Length: 143
Length: 182
Image (tube, rainbow over all chains, first blue to last red; front, side, top):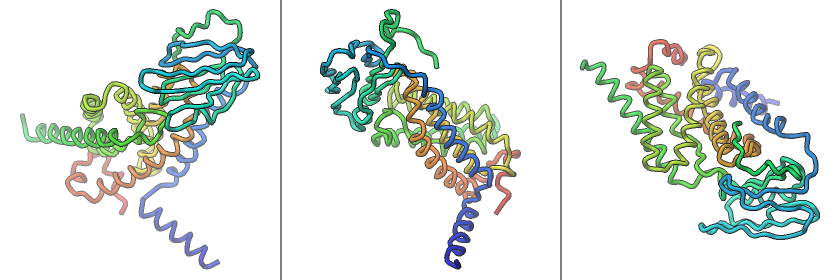
């Protein structure tokens, strides 16, 4: 009991040493919660689609038909490699030589609006609405 | 040109130089966020934080623009866009949160907000690059780093403003109240 109280006192004094005010902590909590808002805005209303688009540097490189199993290797002049696999109506990056491997860990996706982003390679795979011809990737998005 | 004016110019130049050097040194190291090239902790925010408390608003904006342009000469255009988005958004956020006053929040709070919005700005820029809002899903990760960086910058800024007499002497009158506590 005494030790916990001592620890608490210690933490209190160190906070005082930093001269933090109560609202600072409230701010931290609010900001942390606020950082999750994109999940609320982007989540939900997802339907399964059979078309996916590969964009690099916002240029459409290839459109995948998710009903056909295939593998495609994207390689650019700089040596960036992304191996893309379509299997059972879903698409994934199965290999990438980027540093973070976030795109590979994302796994298979098949719902409209879902994306695999490989920012180091400026590469995006987005599942797009099937049979939508107008969506040629050149649209201007102003978020 | 009176000496006061000269002092001001030299001080802005000094801060700009410091911020630029911090920015360049920071960009030499590999980005701590491998998934967003150009995204940085934004330690140069320390200079901006001090500037906010020791300079007029217009001077802080001059400092910001100079710093961005100078850093861009050394680092390149994509980094410039990232820092611009992060820099101005965090500057705006810091001024807004500063309105709450020294009774409610401390310098660290201002810096925390700055660090957070620095990353928000960078992610918004990344959203434009990648053309998908899905990039924003990285925000929780970046927010943790941004808040951590903000915290340390806040502690450092506090110490600098309070302990270093020449800086302390420069505190703008209306900001004196931020430093009255021991």
